[in-house]
Length: 340
Image (cartoon, rainbow, N blue to C red; front, side, top):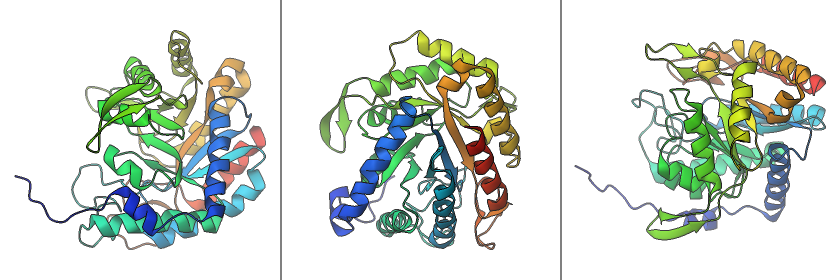
């Protein structure tokens, strides 16, 4: 049984309450175009979507993104850094911490209205602090309008990518959307999801019949899969990337692109393995022009302190999946920039 608890204002009301200043609107437009240029192959830069598994608390996230903004000054000629500010991200089992959108304090009560205010304040502060616009995960499609004016990249996770509403909403977003392969690792299902997101659609959304034109910047994210016995099956290797390229060539999809997620089933959630995986991908980019042409960047789970923790006791340490620490993250980003 569902029990109504409180009214949640429409997204337009929150946007009017915390609007973007004109300078930040301009920054977002410029950053959107920069990310689109990488996905479309109009820029030789690589995309780096990097940051905490879950943005569970504002202070450490802002400290992290402040560092990322300073690092950006050293690599911006080679890389487009997009901080992960995943405010919907809960613990995987769906119990305990529910993500900042629902639970603004990881040890506090569930309060969605306060959560929306918290995430808008966090995104705006991060833009002001770093000069970077961020990525977030579309865990709940109807939450997207509350942050759409703030983001330059949207991600759809492996458990959501085969859901029709996620695909349809992705097609109505003006920024690039990365669709992860399903947990099964099924690549045909991934391509079907991209096709749906790139196609014009009519559907019901937020009490309206809406029409989307399709999103030509919807693209693939390879995060590895899980076999029937629960074992991880990496898919960042040369042979799998070439298979995805072949599937792309068999369609009329626009802007073929792959982002390699270096964590999750590609690393078995062994966060330091992300460095090795990124290096292998860079080697394959040097080896093959086709590989280089389609692999446009990385997702890296990273925070101030390496690893994860059960409770929010260590400042800047993940309370969800293990993350790479800052020192190794900085070294990895600089190494990738040197190789682009």
